[in-house]
Amino acid sequence: MMWNKYPFAKRKPGYEIQNKQNVTEVYIYDAIGWLGVEAETFIKDLKDIEGDVLVRINSPGGSVFDGTAIFNAIKERQDRTDTIVDGVAASAASYIALAGNTVSMSEGAFLMIHEPFSIAIGSAEDFRKEAGLLDKVSDQIAKFYAKKSGKDLSEVKQAMADETWFNDVEAKEFGLVDSIVEENPAENYFDLSVFNNVPDKLLVSEDSETLKPKDIEQALRDAGMSRQQAKAFYAEGKRALDEDDSWASIIRLTNDMRRGVK
Image (cartoon, rainbow, N blue to C red; front, side, top):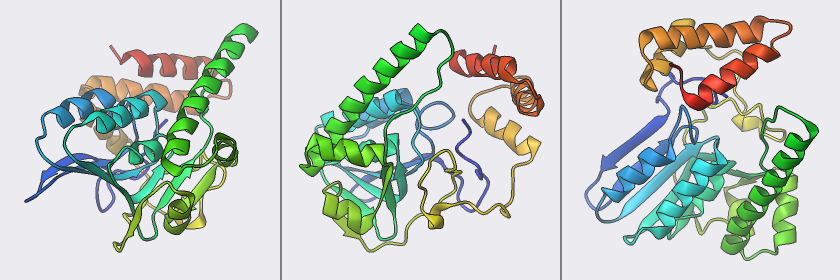
């Protein structure tokens, strides 16, 4: 899924490390996982940083497993590691935010928790297995929120089932963040339409500039593909969207995304 709808806007979403005078700031300004901030890269970079770290988050979420790995890497770090939600911390990004020694939110920022979801293809038994896995993942994530907030698991799970979008004040009242910082929130660059209850101020205008094919191909090349691979990947994705009976193309595209285009 291409969360990053406007990667060439005022500040390109992405992953960045800045060395400041007394702290190293790590920016998670992208999706979590493939075509975004991958756990393997983040964990390696985090291990190489000495001293205090501030992780700044503006992310729509993404891979639950990459998110969990990043959460654990922050939690296990010996030096002080704080987190701040600069703009939006949705889905997997929301529990990454909870890993800090202290957790802050900028005024006007949002934090969203929900039940995990996935796409499954196969037999009835395949779907039952996938549902069982989702239940286990949901239980584990709920424990993150409950431990931080002090809320009962039942209350946390209900908030997840409702797909709850907390503003800065609500997140603090619920116990998910420790403080609110008087900073302007980072701009939302992400298409959040996959979610149900997105606050109006986070909706991306339909009148906004859309990506051109060359921009999409460049984004794929930035992710590590060659020019030829990027062109082929874009063509396959467009064909899948244009075809009336597109399931076969979507399956092929999904498999390519999982193993990398060869």
